[in-house]
Length: 478
Image (tube, rainbow, N blue to C red):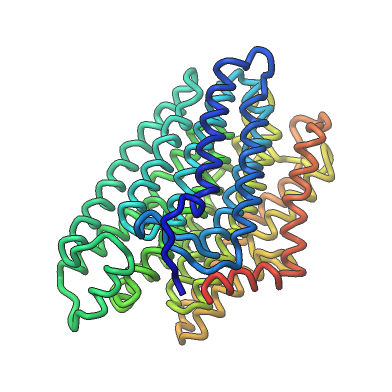
């Protein structure tokens, strides 16, 4: 049941983040000399307040606001909560990295907050106008963040690639939206769905529009065959920016895909099913196979992201409420895993030393047994090894496929999950059994170590006790 409400209270979390971003911008401009970390503190306060409001909204009836452009429902608030969490962790993990390299930390946090606002709009979209607004507000700050290290030529190159490919993706998405408007006469999801439901035979124009829309969504997801930008951008960007890029934007992108395919285009499932199938299988195959041969850990994790987006799409492929819930569960868990994996790279990258190669983790167990153990939990979860939550997340999406008789896809996903576990286990082998070049002990700030530990241990907790989170994901589609 969806009610209509035009009050701005529905967008209170977005308003909080917008005000926080503006205050952080002004605070960093006028009070940076007095309080160096003012932007980070304001960001943490704003994210906490927005999280409280979003959590309090869970369980209410879905409501439309701003003349049907914006929806407030459990799906949006679930996604927002994990966006806040991954953004907060990204900010805290990045603090020392930015300070040691004398990067403009205030700009990083402000741009990150504006990008977060775009993510929030994206997961609450109920019109293609809001979709495009969210995509652009999400993307534009990320282009600037990628080039934030002005003395680092690789960052500028990565930013240019990201900007050009992102612009192409936005153009494809906008062209698809314009074609869909021409076929249905509306931008609103419910009106588009009503028009499509009345059409006995879908026109070629609708199918053509769907191709462009899915191509635009695929670029934002970094799903094959639209993944080519991810390894270069992840590798070229400063590690702190790669950390931010890897988690929260992917949660928002999957949320956008679920919104578009299940709210506006559900009656075209027979057409988009095959397209999503190609993207999902391609991502799983390409991501896992290319990750195996990588020596650069950032590129390895980039291809790992491609494969994980493939598994997230498998839940959507099932085209059932159970499948959508499994996809939601998978992507929020992926966010926690990714922010943890890249978080360690950021935390261990000291001034003048970038942790970029897999061999840079050699002998980590002897240098810091606790960090090695936490990273092992994260890698086990990414590989889908029980009792970590990564196993349960993969199990849910594969089960949703079996339930709709797509057993062959589930078997293929299982085979490549086993193949993909190789490169995660290889990193664990490097940490525990290879000799370290630098044998000095690793000491990290206590706050960052504590958060990293909670981040890693949560993957174990949700693996052993996933019931509450799974129930919340299922309820979001009830």
